[in-house]
Image (tube, rainbow over all chains, first blue to last red):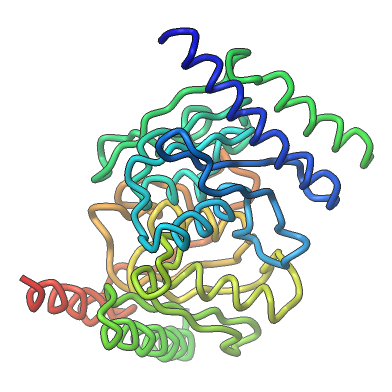
Length: 157
Length: 157
C-alpha cells in the first residue's frame, strides 16, 4: 500500500467524520459514512434514528439507500464504504447483501461491532459474498472517530 | 402454550404469507412480514429490493420502518414480528436494534439465516438486547413459507 492509498483513506475517512459531526449537531449518536466508487464519493449518510423515528436509520444504511438509488441498482458492486465506527450486525449484513467490495472503519465497536469485535459477518465465508475489511487503527483516524462519540456521551450524562 | 396461541401464530403467519404473495406478484423474492403489538397488526411489509433499487428493502425492514413511523418511536418494545423466512444478518440486527420482544419465522434459511442457521444474532447474550425466537416447523407454516420461494426460483430457471 503506497502513500497515495494512505492519503486517500485519510481523506475519505475525514469526509465520513464530517458526516458524524452532522449527526452530533442533530443530537444523534455521532456516526458518519460515505460511499466511494471509482475514487469519487457517490453518497453520504449520518445517523438519524431519533430524527426519523427509524431504528434502521444508521449512517451506513442512509448512505447505502442513497447510493443504490443514484446508481439505479440494488447491488453496489465495486463500492467502498468509509464509516467512522465498526458496523453493527444490521449494517454489516446490509454491506454483504449490497455486495460491497470493501469497508473501511475508523474505531472498533467492542459492544456491537460485526466485522471483528462481537460477530464476524463481513467477509465470512459462510455467506455468498465477502466484503474486505480495514480499519481500527490510527491510519484510519480511529482516535478521532472514537473521541467524537465518547465526548457526546460524556456531555449527555 | 395453549390452543389459542397456536391459532394466533397461524393466523399471523398467514398474514405474513399474504405479504409474500404481494412480493411474488411484483416479481420479487417472495418474503413477507408483519408486526404485531397488543395482538393487533401495526404494519406489513414485503420484499421490494428490485422495485425500489434498495438492497435494504427486505420485508422485515419495510415493516420495521412503517411500525416505527406509526408509533413515533425508534424503539419497538413489546412488538412481535412474523416473517415467512428466517431473517438474514441485516434483518436480525435490525430486530435487535429496534428492541423487538420476539420474532416468529416460517421456514429456516440455511444459506443466510441469522437466528439459528448461519449466525446466532437474535437472542445472543453478547448484545445489549435479546429477542426471543420461534419458528422453523409446521406449527408456523414452514412448508407453505418455503414452497412459495422454491416455486418462484423454479419458474425463473
